[in-house]
Image (tube, rainbow, N blue to C red; front, side, top):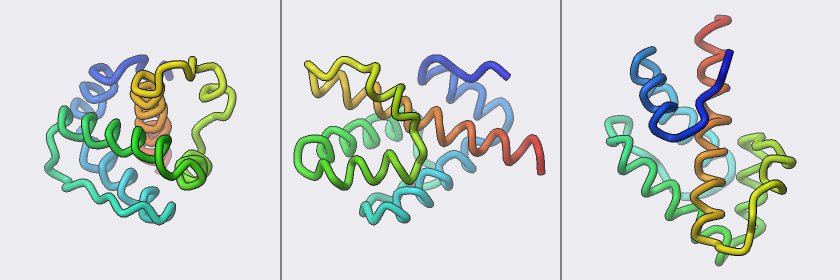
Length: 116
């Protein structure tokens, strides 16, 4: 399985497989486990999801770095992928980390759907 390489492809694949709602539910579950007060409505538009997630990750990096690291740990974002990102521009970094979060959540949803 080749996993998506950008946000648009990920959302298109999730929608095509009718798993977009499951993706949002998985995000909600992991954010709750990380004690981050953010719940996405299951009917959220993909563009709004991207914007809210990006904004939240940006704020976590800026203001609550420990919670940010905890979130990455709970979601199980690969450490090497995060370390490979350029941290010079926090806005760009938070956008890239947001995609890594979505990508990892998509992997969980896809595998659960495929093998259950």
